[in-house]
Length: 120
Image 1 (cartoon, helix red, strand yellow):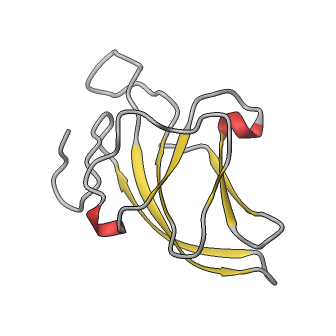
Image 2 (cartoon, one colour; image 1 turned 60 degrees about the vertical axis):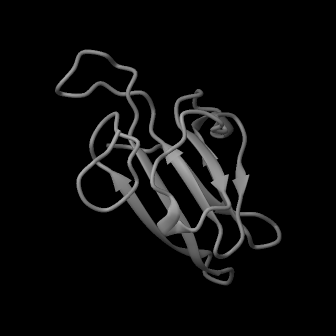
Image 3 (cartoon, one colour; image 1 turned 30 degrees about the horizontal axis):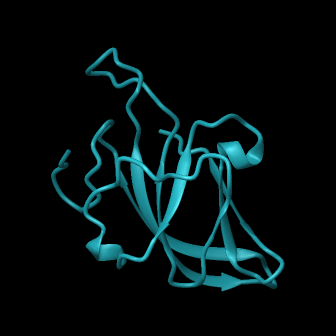
């Protein structure tokens, strides 16, 4: 599965998440910041994703991302997404290194973002 977004640093050294639309590669992936604590994010939302613009986070900031629409091996409907949540843990501006934790729901079409069995 591919999430198709880039992470860069802005001029203030903050991480910037860029979905495909912000990279001029079509409006397929999405990203949104969230104020929820990482472990409190249980489901990906059904809307509100930025498709064409970047999202800037601080260290400790969290976001939810979705992949480009994809088909699943269990269905012929191509409008499903993979979802993930991530949190910025540290930024080293000298080496341009961004440490983050991420949890991906590897079950196509499921919005659950907790460890264990998937939830829709």
